Image (cartoon, rainbow, N blue to C red; front, side, top):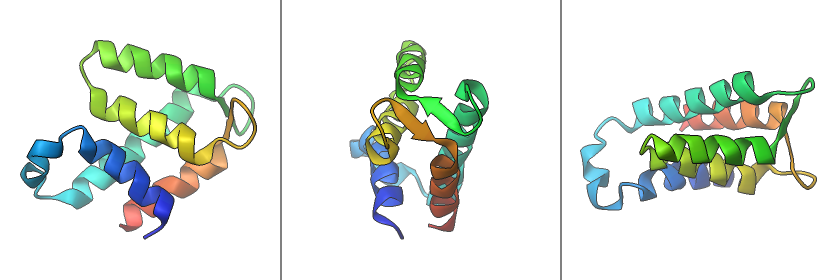
Length: 104
């Protein structure tokens, strides 16, 4: 298990800190997190292979309005883990992270 995959996973579960035991099938949740990240690429990729952090943060705000803090936390932590240059995330890094999550 990679440290960054574990950190992303923890960002998700910390949203439900008092209810973690309710997530009996963690593998399904890890796959769901990976699917969220893949869809983020689909929605936000501007130029080939690049996502802007500002767009991810804007998406976080939209998601929080839907009362889904877990997904917003995952996206924020993804920025923390993968931002290479100020404001830029490489899609290949997100896809690699998805594979790490699915391997947990």
